[in-house]
Image 1 (tube, rainbow, N blue to C red):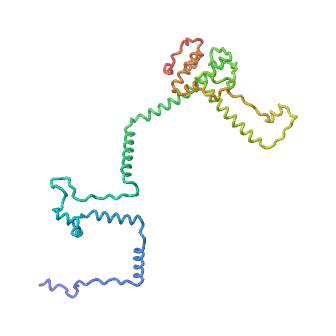
Image 2 (cartoon, helix red, strand yellow):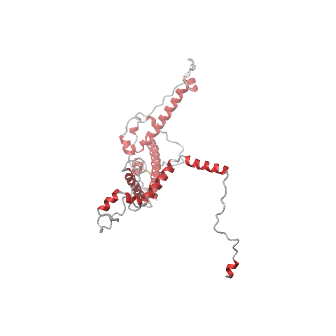
Image 3 (cartoon, one colour):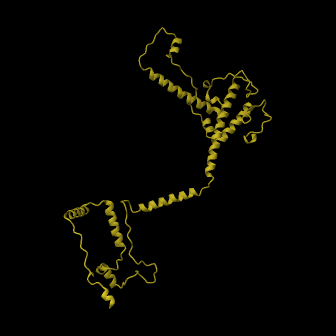
Length: 321
């Protein structure tokens, strides 16, 4: 009783709702304007596609056998008359029976039906090829780089051996009988015969490619020079009939005719066959040519007095290590 007397009945509330905030005419006008803009805005294709996807997922997540729509379904009514009471279709002993209808898969784009499977096949093949590349030997890259370096080094040695062959063959043709071709104190240089006047097929095939490439480069350079000279002399110029040949040559009026190799444009099957060889095989033939024709060891860098070549360790570079 004492607790009831202590209650202040004069300050008690009886569920009165709090007064609502009044909306001014300006606020109402702005609210209606915003709502109208939202309703009148045209949705983009992405927004429409997203809404369609959400609606489709919401419909597919619901069971077709439950709900108010299931009672109105004529197909479900026909199945119920045939004894369907829900659950899986078919025999009850079948554990793999389908409980829900086949879920549709929406197709994006306008491509053919079998394009997706073709893409999957290509992606699977690409993935398999990547796995095969990963499974390769980790030392393959090192071996490839090593082989490339060895080939480049062998090509440099081939060029050097061709230069030696050219020098020794020209000295032999000029009648030089030098016993030590590496003697740096020799003050009488051998007189070399011009290569441009010598047919290519008369040159040994082991170093014929050096002369051929040199002559082709010289021919291209001369053709470019002649083209530049003819293009600069299109304007009419003054020619004095009283000038002699020396004056014309000094003034650059005379046209210089260059003599090229006779058979430069002819096919050379022998040279093509030699160029098709591996680098180490070409180097081996060059070394044998030097030893056989000039008693010269490419690895020793020395010319021996006779064909016995006494003191030479062997034919290969490994023998000279």
